[in-house]
Length: 380
Ligand SMILES: NC(=O)c1ccc[n+]([C@@H]2O[C@H](COP(=O)([O-])OP(=O)(O)OC[C@H]3O[C@@H](n4cnc5c(N)ncnc54)[C@H](O)[C@@H]3O)[C@@H](O)[C@H]2O)c1
Ligand SMILES: [Zn+2]
Image (cartoon, rainbow, N blue to C red; front, side):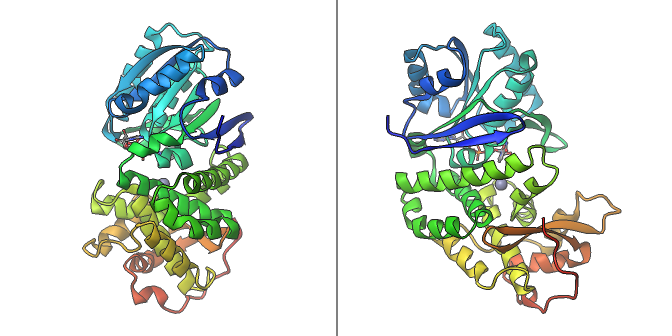
């Protein structure tokens, strides 16, 4: 069988493979290598199901699995406790036993909600991720964070539940709209900065091919990204320390997403804007290697990712968005500072400096003001 390789993830006492495959062929055998063949519940949504559900079901049935299919409504708006309750009942309808795997076929929304149902039905069923968006392949399907949104905010109810297998069929990306692909590329850039010089140089070389969706280039990018995420989550399975470095670019990115209004600037685009903003700010202060901002900007431009925030966003609203969910008595935010490819520091940034950070999002010269006197950043 042709394969684009695999990455082994060791986290929280469990060990699983992320297999990068040209298509769904091989999924049944890969599942059978880690789980006893028998019944399986395939969960997808009403957009991905009609595109790829039959191929997955045929692969599984042909490989000796007895599949029940459940279809969720598409969309982040359905990543709720109500959907989770409904899904738990549909899984129970299939009379599963503790060895019955639950398979998520779709993007990060599907993976998060199906993983949470797998984590809780019968106090935990084996979980298999079949990610069909680039974002889910490089980010959401690895690391075991599963959950749903509530009116209080995103991903506030959930669990850590590691999959037994992640199987990424690249041909599903053919039907993925361009803006969804770009969202995944934002996280790919982030992972390359976190990984180091070799990953960044390889992404620089591959960027034009990635925009053409060249399969080998995509496979190299996904593999490098998964290796990066796998290493970080292995070092910090429960997000008490170094996993925070995965928030690189996200402090600013989340603020841009929120202030622009969800949907206007997509998450991956906001991450790119946030990455460049934090790099610009840090480089101006001598915290990041000279030239790193320009380099990442060039990559993002090749990938058709934005590098500057929409100019009509209100800076005061962005400052508020960055500081708003912090406890009142907190005088700092934690900034993930990219000092060089492969090196980041977690640095407390006084709230008084947040307006300067926001200026950097607009490419403002204020961001290049001389560095304020402060202690050298501490190693994360
Ligand atoms: N668990 C984690 O560690 C983690 C990490 C990052 C993001 N997330 C979560 O992931 C979600 C975002 O993931 P996403 O960007 O994949 O969103 P998504 O799942 O909503 O997918 C985006 C859209 O593309 C559709 N789609 C999926 N695959 C397709 C295909 N092959 N062809 C055509 N259309 C397809 C989806 O149905 C959806 O409409 C958010 O809810 C976020 O909180 C989780
Ligand atoms: Zn992200």
